[in-house]
Image (cartoon, rainbow, N blue to C red; front, side, top):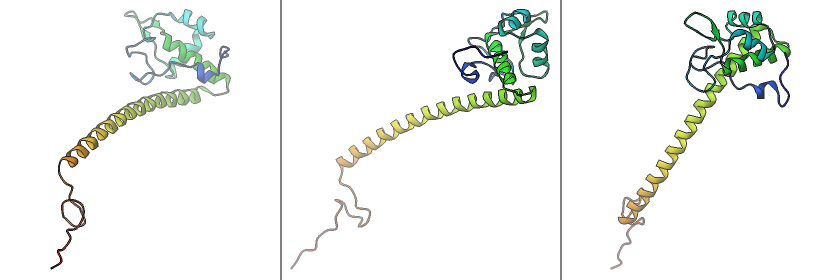
Amino acid sequence: MAASDGGTPAEEYDGGLSASGAHGTSGAGPGTRGVYAISVAAELVGTGQQNIRQYERKGLLTPGRTDGGTRRYSENDLATLRRIGALLDEGLNLAGVKLVLELEAENRGLTEDNKGLADDNRGLREDNRGLRKDLKEARGAEPRTDSATGHRGGTAPTQEQP
C-alpha cells in the first residue's frame, strides 16, 4: 500500500492515535464518528480486512463498535490505516509501526501543550507590560527614593557651606 501522490506519508497523515485513549477514536470531534464497515475501510485504504483485524489485535487502532459489536471505522481510523500502510512500505514491522504511532501521538500532545504555554506566556507578558506601565505612572506621581542613599529625589543632599 503506497501513499497517495502530493506529499510524503508523514505529511499526508492527519489522524491516528487520539488523545481520548491510547489508540481509539472515542473522542468527540470531526473525523471521529465510525461510519465505515471493515469491508469499506479496507477498500478505501487499499488493504485487506484481515490486515485491519491484525492491526487492531496488535493495538494499532481501536475502531468504534455498534451495539451489536460490528466495527465502524472513522475518518481518523482511515488516516491511521493509511499511515500504517506507509510505515510498512518504508520497511517497519508492526512493533515499529506501533512505536511510531505512539511517538507521533505524544508529539501532537506536546505540540498542543506548547501552544497553550506560549499563549499563557503571551498573556503574562501583556500583564507584565501593564504592571510596568502602572508602576511607571505611580512613580511619576511621587518622587523616587534612591536605593543607594535612601533619599528621595535620587541624589544625595548637598551640605550647606557656612
